[in-house]
Length: 169
Image (tube, rainbow, N blue to C red; front, side, top):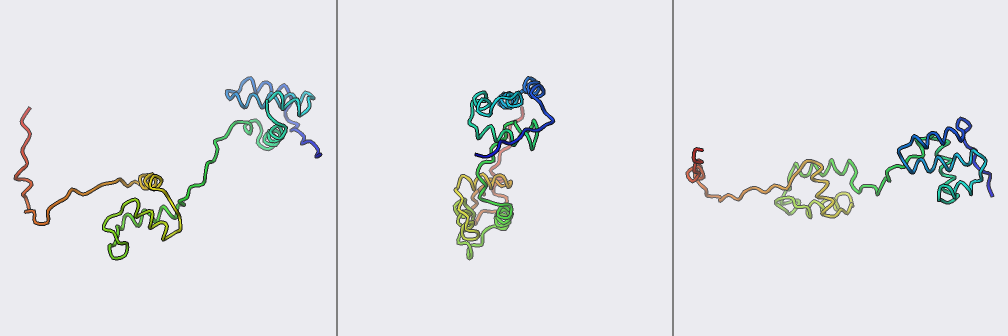
């Protein structure tokens, strides 16, 4: 069995209890009280019982207290999964959207999410769902816009002929 990690010498039980009393984070207060028990001479097992955790977690708390001080005992946001698209992928995606498809090369006349997903796979071997791709495209500042259909033989000014002014209020 290994040797126990020593606690920082610049803290004591009274200081940790005072910090726990002032803390607005209940999880941090629980950790501080468990570590204060160790400063008072309690065993790590008793501290684990006070904190309602295992010995390994008490050891992690000691490490965090030694390295980061009192702020090391505050809960952090979990990092979550790494995004599939990097900044380089996003830059290329923005460039290809801005450039627009070339029907001879890309085989489409306008970009759909499925087409952009296929392009990402062919270009970078990155598989992205349509929902994720939609979120990424919106984050880049693009929206799904469709042009209003217009007949090829529509006369210039024909629309103005059918517009009616609003009645005066």
